[in-house]
Amino acid sequence: MTRLCPIGTDLDRAASLLRDGGLVAMPTETVYGLAGDALNPSAVARIFEAKQRPFFDPLIVHLPELSWLPRVVAADSPQTRELAAAFWPGPLTLVLPKAAAVPDLVTSGLPTVAVRIPEHPMALELIRRAGTPLAAPSANPFGRISPTTAAHVLEQLGDRIDYILDGGACAIGVESTVLQLPAEGSGERPILLRPGGLPVEELERRLGPIDIPQSAAADDQANPAPGMLTQHYAPRTPLTILSTSPPVDAVFSGSQRLGLLAFRPPPCDAGRAYEEIEVLSSTGDLREAAAGFFAALRRLDKRGLDAIHATPFPEEGLGRALNDRLRRAAAKSDRTTDVR
Ligand code: TXA
Ligand code: MG
Image (cartoon, rainbow, N blue to C red; front, side):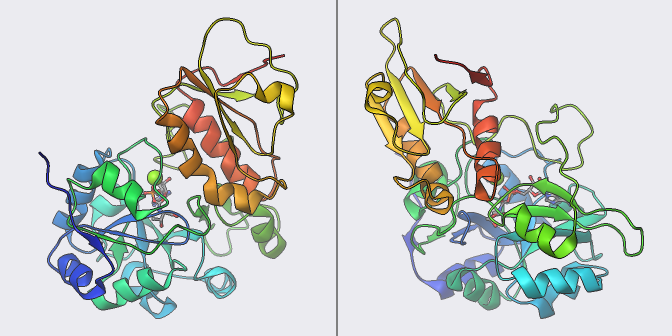
């Protein structure tokens, strides 16, 4: 039998494991992260190994406060300071010029490093006690569904890491928004590398227009967001995105056992086609939907269904990040289908 790691709230134990090059899953407001000492190349290598993550996919470095920024970033700018003041701690990751102390493994050899200050008291305290910036990708095996509770981490990575710090369920539920800032004075626009927990509208209110590249670039293309692979966040059950939300009337032939991941409650007749239905928000609230999204996808994935259908989200606010995760979860099967 495989041995699972301990799970608990012992910050000192977690910090000391991190100082010794160990791996600790930590709660953040977005998703659970798999943390290791960002300045210790062998700890960083262990993160890639535990996740079975390809080395070309760079990691996010987590800090407890802005005064730590010079430890990992070579140069900041007034724009960086403004965004930091407005949105940190919070679900925003900034891609900035990297300091020499950051191992190339963290950034996949890029001259930039992705940085954020998470908004979770246990994460902040853990980083402070560890005394070092923490590299932390989402604490799931590469390409699978992201964890939003300690139990999710235990299930997927419990035999490969040293400790899980339990900070309850993640309040936001989708990963941070990743933004690349242009060089100062270049006149170029910031680029949205990953839609996430901070709606792009809030960033645009401060920064003006942001470039939003077509997110689903092919895996083998040079991509402004390394690691934004088309297939990601994937359940084992094939997932199909419906063309309407809620599904209008679903008449299915055959004896397929279907599950529905619905943003809002579906009409009764549409609902009858499904053996299992997860409604993310009875009132159509995107925040509530995001908070429960990955957990609902996991529950459906465990039911041994033949297929999962998902309704799309409105393409605004957190809906943009949720549609992005849906598209990537569906990338193995057909992208969208019309069930009418
Ligand atoms: O909410 C989050 O961001 C979570 C929690 C744990 O903080 N972390 C997370 O990390 O989602 P991860 O490793 O799953 O996503 C990191 C992504 C990479 O896949 C890549 O798209 C982008 O951040 N990234 C990291 N470094 C980059 C860089 N130097 N240039 C461009 N993109 C970068
Ligand atoms: Mg991830």
